[in-house]
Figure 1 (cartoon, one colour):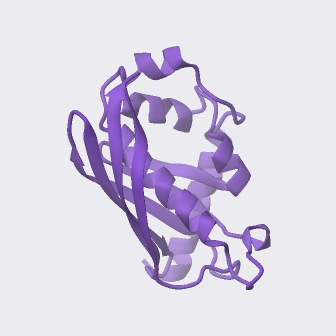
Figure 2 (cartoon, one colour; figure 1 turned 120 degrees about the horizontal axis):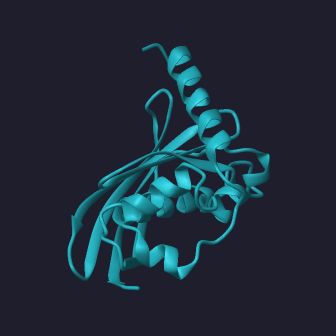
Length: 174
């Protein structure tokens, strides 16, 4: 697929995701306990549960969720810039923390939750508002009874890598 066709596909995916999402909000602890991680993510993606406030603030949406894998997409803008004239590293960190954490969550049964213990990021190249949409894809490496490990990458439609991360999460009963 050419880059132009891929870009159009990504933009269509993002628009479809935005139409499905409910208004931002926070789900209840009961909802968290009752659903597996994958069911919870599906309910958010389908607009059954509220969309995530940080996604609304930062302008990114869930594109794909499946066992052990999560993809978010957003288009960085000038509102995400630092004083040096590029997108603040916190934008990439937030996308990466979200995709790796949700990849872990997608593997958890009902009644289990997680929190990030460690997030390690490598920044490869500057993100600017001229690159168009970026995708943050997280994949699990290991999910155990008490800890989980995942990795994530931010790329553009041309496949250029902007940043990658690894995380260690604590898994616990909720």
